[in-house]
Length: 192
Image 1 (spheres, rainbow, N blue to C red):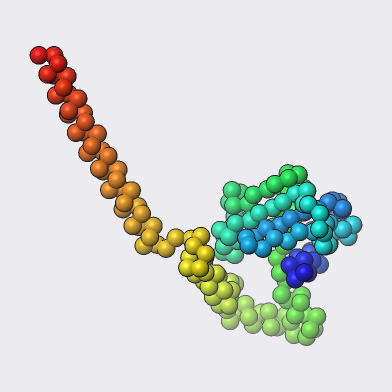
Image 2: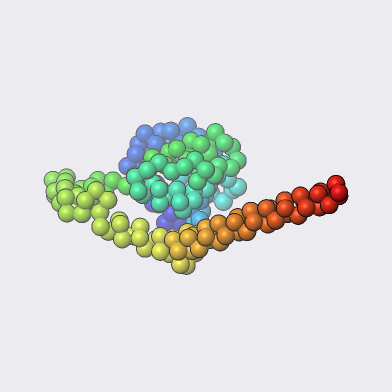
């Protein structure tokens, strides 16, 4: 289970998050970022272990929320859907929302603290805060969402839709005025 290992790796870098999850030991959760769903049971150490049982609480995050988070902003609450035990789901959503990968910590295990610090500073200065690689990955993901799994609309498609709605609104207004004139003409005929 690569997904469980990834979540546990991120939890390993955040002991405070594990402590909070440990309070819910034995509870089964599900975390979904379509099309991937990770299910597990919380352990006494705050890890997520494999579980076949039905989740007591679920958190589903939309792709839009992930894109918003990657851009450095807080996602809209409507982009996160909670199910089951709302208290547990809220805790899981908050804790998972705070998980961030500390690449410097992982790199320090391979090359040592000093070298990892130098590499991290070099990458930040060379690529900026967001980094060219992260930007390209984000662009690729957005393109995938537009082309392969059309969850995001293209700008010209939205513009065409808006123009069609405007034209329909204008047609309806013209029809309303015609109907008013016809009603007035009928009322005058009836009065005479």
